Image (cartoon, rainbow, N blue to C red; front, side):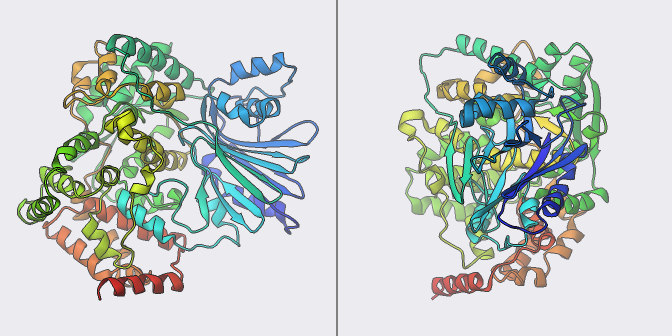
Length: 640
């Protein structure tokens, strides 16, 4: 695992010193080795966390003729098979690492090589003879890759801090992206929260030559449900795919463990890992003092079943929490309104004390239908037959009459979110249910930025009449929620501690298989992940298979009334809020006051605001005066 950086240039002074400097900002991603490659037209840099081939494989790797160079972040699990195929074609290798296999694959098959790779990656390749730079990102977006155009030149890197190190990159807040952030808890698609900096989409490649840029997909998951697939055949196929994927993901020359939450997905990974391992596995879990978030009874059961060398970290409301929140902001690049980042931070920190690689259960919900939102999508369809005025009245009444619950996701939260989502278009409602802020809260906080619509994200998806409603929303999550929230969070928190995390459920063959499944094998009645559960029945205890769905979360509501209260007040000051020129301080103050008085549970919203304002301060992000004036003009027009 590594971090990469680079830029094209013409006559830039001190180019080698500059590439060395921005590459050094990624040292946490690769503390074992750092190197650069420079020509009069391009500079490439890489830091390396040694996982495979510990003796050689330092980066960048350059061909013997000096024409082609590569910097690579990720792991390729079928690299040995590809190497054998390339050797049969006459290629010779100087190392035993997967990076050189990717380089040789590019020389043999050009950009078609990316569809042959099984794994996770962000990669850059330079051809001096053609003056051609190629960037590519893995199919689902496990590994990140950012880029920005500066005149005729391009700068790119594994993290935003690489690009922010360039003197010509502005630090202006993207207001459209900010609305996405407040709506979804993350910024979807190509955008970032900084104008002019973009993410390369998963499954895409970028070619830059002589100042011209072209971007295109090399892989797309296609939802083509096959109603002829029966349960027995589907179970057999999925069992085989899971066994193969987990075995491939265990290839490593360094110690490896498994993240075990006690949930279905991570327990499935542990089951197949135990089958493939000849030695005792190490497992890692997070426990909470708060009952609402604690899953210790489940992960202790599964660790005991497989006799693992188990390690757990107990999160409690002590002084480490505020310090960690501030620290993780530095590594996040972009703020994350998903409070689940905090336990991932501590889990990664503990895991790295014992191993360098960990397997996770990420992806099971998005592929097989595990989220409560899919049931909400179903329930909302008959709700929308009720006149909108009645639904709006019911939502207003729920806000006034239903008391708040101190549980993590209480009855009041579900009812209010369901009713509000029923007022939105189906795609927008599905995205809204995964967010935190209500429409009213967003309008109050950003009065000049109304009218931003989320349904654009589903414009190019196949219609529900072709793939089914639930499949359509799963595809929406696979395109946005999974890479831009879940995988983003895991990558930043784990790589901050130089830990590589691999998600075997997101092997592209499993994704393609899941996309062919009819909805009845994903959701059956009130049961989600039906096929995955039936595949694992008899392998895992029923107590694990049939346990209620629980997210990876923190007791945010209580912590903001306790251990995080001081940090919240220190961060969301009047000066900090008003200095943006777009946020309404009175609305921010009211939200905090209502939460502290227990009139509402706004822990998730406050987490999003806290991490946002910590990030704005840390990276000195500004709202240009022209944008402030435009926002104020829209706000004035809306009130007159």
